[in-house]
Image (cartoon, rainbow, N blue to C red; front, side, top):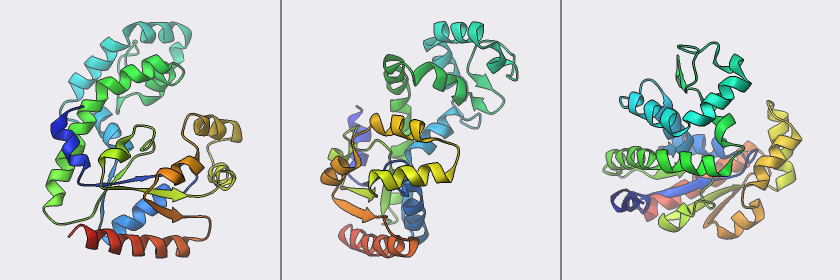
Length: 232
């Protein structure tokens, strides 16, 4: 890990939660109070976007790293590539890196996923450090929204960790009700993470989202005021 970038972790609080916990809702509440919330997934999305000044290098790096897998996928599922820029094996699309194709390569293969993370992690770190540097001079509270905060052990390097908590069964029900997923898919995602109860033990601050939005807002307001005061 780049030590220069690691130093920036020590200036922020980590925010996390499982699928269906309401982490995104809490993040928006913090934003509305004036916090800067850096979305880890958003940094990756920006990295894969054609608007990224370094997009061509990112595309070439990933195409070369997964050349064999792309060729096999092209043979097995050519329809995936039919609407592409050139219709050939590769990750480039009209909007940037094709995340659906990339997902098919890495999410069923832990070794490939680890390889992808190794490739993009330094770039994400650099983007994160830049945002922190630009905002900390304004004395704003800065949060880093990271789904796998504890799994990646990033919480050990930060000012503190915030968990948006709900019992697992409630989270599952909310995720399914929200749509675009089913119970089996949610359970598979949860199985790949530390349990919510273990995360609760590891977290420095808990936002209990078992109730309604007004109750969550009240907790966010109080924690925001506390952390902002502590950082000044």
